[in-house]
Image 1 (cartoon, one colour):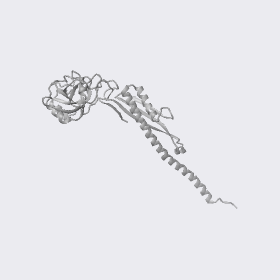
Image 2: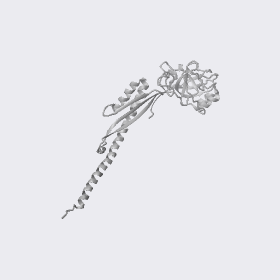
Image 3: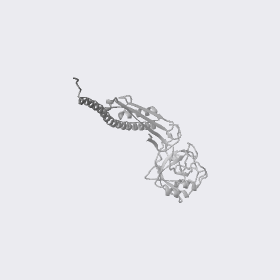
Image 4: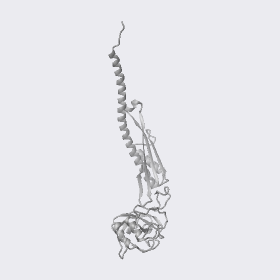
Length: 312
């Protein structure tokens, strides 16, 4: 007589195989979920570290104009936030580009140690992030007022002279009826070198109806060309610009552009005094890195506030 294997034993063996395969698949799915969540958290930490490192390096370059110092600073900040170049598989790469202002790019790579995903042969995978910070002194003045001030309103260290930079005691700058400011306490009008100053044209600039789109070169003449104190413009300044911080160009004795400063306008009077009252809110900076029209450190031409921001 022939013996026969019970069919339930065959089915039992098939179930064990299917269960084993299903368990592996289930563990793989759980691994992807848990390890994926851990990866996301690690990436967020890497991104924060890269952002801080890029900003720190850009700020260092702004202050010291030294690429090696900026790179070291970026890597130091990355290490302080858990990612040291060459340690535990971490790679921190810092790149500085000074072709247009200065950008500091930080790339961070680090392995993520997987738990469940290692069951399917993925013991680690690489997590990478990048951040880029831009730094420099701006060469563009948005909403600039058509009024020029004298470089003599600033000291040799770039600080506004005490009488011109005191918010508690705004100074009344007069109009000496010349093409350029006659002294530190004088102003003149400008259309930024586009020709003879016309009262109606300058009024449009003050009111924001005409936008001057130009980049001023260091030493470029931006005086009035035709003298005149343009009495009617004072009331426009008082109406449209009072209470505002506005960029204003600063010139030398010959009306040649030296850079920007920020001026707070309190009021303006077109009566007998013909004055614009206010005070400077920024220092004079004669040589600084610029953004937009020259390579890093090569243009000794702009005043104003520095730029430091993440761009990627």
